[in-house]
View 1 (tube, rainbow, N blue to C red):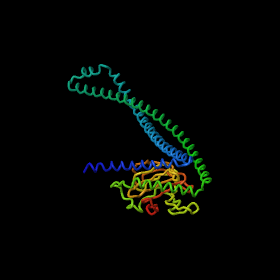
View 2: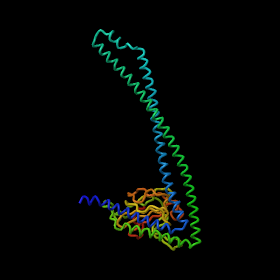
View 3: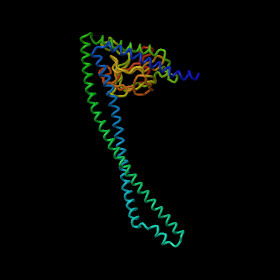
View 4: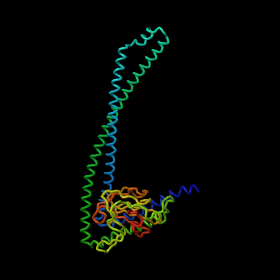
Length: 362
């Protein structure tokens, strides 16, 4: 019985990994049907995502190195002050030793008539010599520590300069990639206009998202949720929105001249703001999708999915477990209305739900 209990999580993990592989195969197959501009847009978007994550890591490293250098400077200042004090103590001790001469112990013995008093004086003298020796040893250790700290400071400073140079280059690369993405988006708009118009393209984008959701539901249909996972339905009305910002478009709102209606909400925010999970679950999709940009889909069990689209960069990857409030991505520059933010959906067995009925938006 114990062996079966132990095998259950491993079996579930294998099922999840198989489902994610199946979803990825569908995505790769769908990629072959995209136009050249769309494939280039996916590639550039993924490169921007990678650069944003690398830049964030380097910025974190720079902050850590700067704090480390500040700590090293304080420690070096303290040790230098200690060295000055020890120099004075050692100098005084050596001067006293020189003045007393090499025959000091013999003089003590010859000048004392009382043997007990002679023994005490020799003990005092030994203690004095031991103290001088310890002062000298401490002085030497302090000098060694100062040398070590100076070398560590030089190495950390060199690493900081190198990381700053890398960051500057990465930021230049990011600007170039963003320019390329903007050019691709403009070319794609022109292609859509000359090919079939905006409405048909939006309908195709919605169909692509619907196909992805169907594929996800098929792939995870037979995977039981972990027992410790809080039921999604039980959290109705209490979950936080993934972004704290203004609602740019509500569920059911019409767009494309009234021909289509929103199946989610647009949440406005500053570009780069963290996008957080509304409920615990496992990420089953984290990639670029036509019409949705960089998209994260979280499986919450029992047929519930949350979707976070039009992100600037992805923080979590396929297969990752996330808790409520944990960052998944960062908000993009265009959530669908020309303003920064994200597009957010909740689905149950593939059917779109009004996110504002599930999330506390006060």
